[in-house]
Length: 260
Image (cartoon, rainbow, N blue to C red; front, side, top):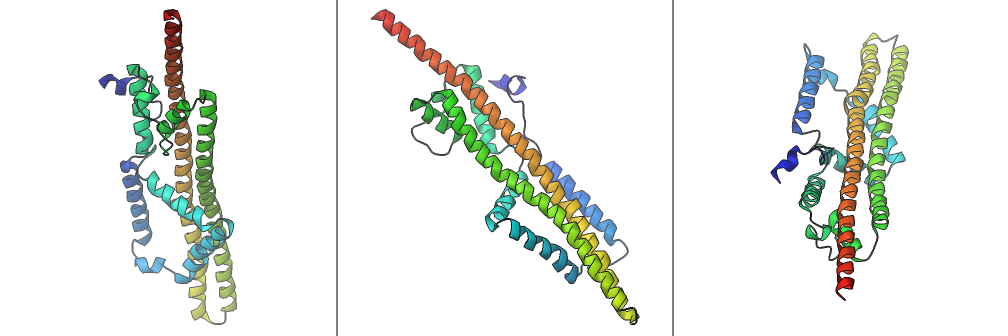
């Protein structure tokens, strides 16, 4: 089985976004933050009023459109995405299937399938033992994958919405700041804070969209594509094993009939 890793017929998809990409992204962001703060105190880039308008406003808008469970689910997906895609469990399932396909084994050789327990391959074997045909199993598993994909796409949509809302709120803060500037023309001391608010909120909105929400949305969207493709491969290899098992059973019945 040592040659499996070099085979062109097995893994079409591979593990992506390893920790090195995360480290590189963090280093680049640190570099951007350093460039912004060079020659000035980092405290000068922190404006509580601007943060409330942009960050607080974005969170309030997202909570209005999505429930708290969608937000928690998105955070969970983002944490898992930092460890690479696909998940280790899917990688193991793929590896087990590869060994079975090349080694001439059956699905029942890699999973017992005694009951439904949430393990993809185990559940497929269980369904097969219950007399379901592959097309029926394929329909059930595909429905399960689509349900998971729906949740994943909801997380992408949430991040994309946030990426659109943050700059809009930044512009809203800019207008508020400019109004303060106009009202404070008679008082030069009041112009500085108002102008600062006008500029910092635009910076917050653009920064959140460009450096946070959009990259994360793109990351999850790509991961979703890999997730779907990986399950498509698993089902294809499962079909090979189940058809092999059906042929074996048919051959055994023929032999028994001939012997009778």
